[in-house]
Image (cartoon, rainbow, N blue to C red; front, side, top):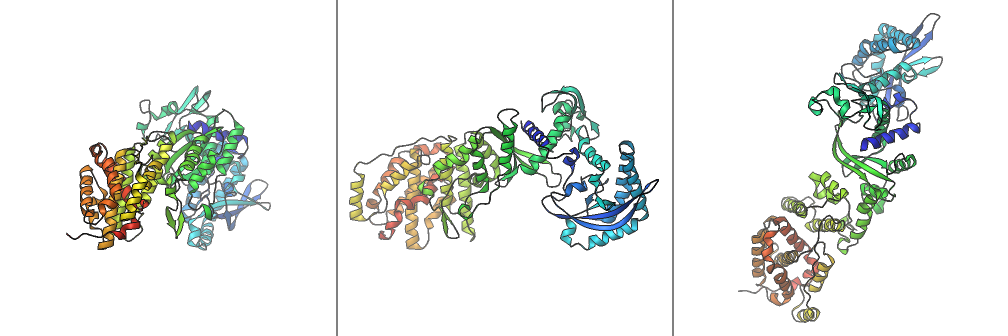
Length: 631
C-alpha cells in the first residue's frame, strides 16, 4: 500500500531533521519554482514603560526564493475570509488591506487571547491601532509601490507585514502566534471537515497497524482521499464515521504529511506526458539505509541528453537507471491527473511493488535483444541525418494514445496482450495517415515506418511472452538457387525468393503463420503492379481497388485476381515472377479458407506490410525491363 510507503518516507525525513519545526510543513510557497516580489508594509516597534507601540515605517520590496519563502508564513485560505496569515497574493490591495484589518487581525487577536502569549497580544493590539489610524497612508504607499512594478511582476507578487525592532527586521515566522496559526490551520482538518467531526478512540491505525488512543477521519494529505459527498462514505453514509474507513493516528498523520510533501516536491516525474509519483518501499521492513539509498537514486534522476543521444527519451533513460539497482526496494508508480485550480488529483493508474529487475527487463534487456534487427537500421531521418529505430514506450504511446494507462499496466505486470487489439491499433494509425496524405501536403508518417514500428512492438511483446507466436518453416526448394539463376540469365530477375525466405526465417515473431506469409506475398505482388503503373502512367489507378486499406477476405481475393490479370499484360511476367507466384499459391491460395477466421485488421495489416516491404526483395531493380503486350 503506497500510504505506508509515504509514511515511511516522512518518518525518515523527520528523523533526518529536514524540517525542525512542525509548522513549517504547512507553509506554502505561493509561486513555486520562480523568484518573485514580496511587498512589505514595515512597522517599527517601540517598547515603553507600560505598553508596546508601533509606527508605520513605509513600504519595501524583497525577492522571495525557494529558500526564503517560509519566513513569510503564507498559507492559502478561503476567498471570503482571506488567507490564514497576513501574507497573501497581491491584487486589489484596497480589498486585501481591508480584509486584513477587519477579518484576519481580529481572528488572530481572538486566537491569541486564548492560546498566545502576552507579548504577542500586545504586538497585535498595537498593530491594530496603528493600521486603523494610518489606514489611508498605508494603502496609498502600498499602491504606489505596486504600481511601479511591471505587469509580469505584479502577477507574481505577494503582500505581507514585517516589523523592525532594535535594528533587526522581524517576519511573521519570528512570532509564535503566527506559527501556531499556520500549524492549527494545517492540522485542524484531520478530524474536522465538511462541518462534522470524525474521530475514533482506542482503535488500530491503518498505517502503523498499532492501537492508538486517537484516530483521525480526515488525515489523508492527498486530495484523492475525499468524502465531500456523503455517498462516498461507507457505514450508512455518515461522514462522522469516516475514521472507520481510513483511521490514521496523530503520529502517522504527521509522518504522512511530511512524506506527502517530500513525494510531491521531489518524486514527481513525467512519462510520455503523464504525471506520476515514484514511491519507493524497501523489501525488508524498517530498512532505513535502503530507503535513504533509494530516495537518493530517485531524486538524482535528472538527465540532459547529449547530441548523440537525442533520439532517446529521458523517460526511458530514467527507467533504465532504476533497473541497474538490485532488488532491495520496490517502486509504486502512481499516475494521476491534477486539477490546476483545486490541486485535487485523480488516480489514473497505480502500479504497486515493481522491482528494479522488472525495469531492467522492460527497458534494457528486452530492447537490447530486439533493437539490433537489421530492418531498423537507418529507418528514419531527422534533418537528413539517418537514425536507427529503437524501442521506447513512445511506440505504445503512438498506438495507444487514448488508452495509454491500460497498455502500460499490462506490460508492467506481465498481462497477456490481445493481438487482435494490436492489429486494430496498427491499422487505425496506418489508415488515418493514408487518408491524411491524400488531402494534406503536411508531413505524414510513411506507412513503411509505421509498419516497422509495429514490427518492433510485436518482437518486443513476443520476447516478453506477452503475445504468442507460432514459428513456421517455409517449404524449401532444393534446386531454388540453380532455378533462380537460370531464370535471371534468360529473363532478368524481378523477385529474389532467397531474400524472401531469409526474411520469413528471420522474422518469425512477425510472420508466424502460413496465411500471414501468403497475405504478405500478395502485398508484394500488388506493389509490383503499382510500381509498373507509376512508371508507365505517372500514377497508380489500381490503388483505388485497395479501398483505403479496409480489406476483407473477399476483397483481398479480388485484388489478387485483378493484379494477376493486369500483370499478365506484360511480356515475360509469368517466368520472371514464377517464384513469387509459387509462394502465393502455397501460402495464400492453399490457406485462403483460413482468411475468414482472422480479423479484417489483421488481414489488412499483413497486406500493407507486404506492400511496404516489397522493395527489400529487389523488385525495383528490374522494373524497367517490363514491356506491355498490346492486345
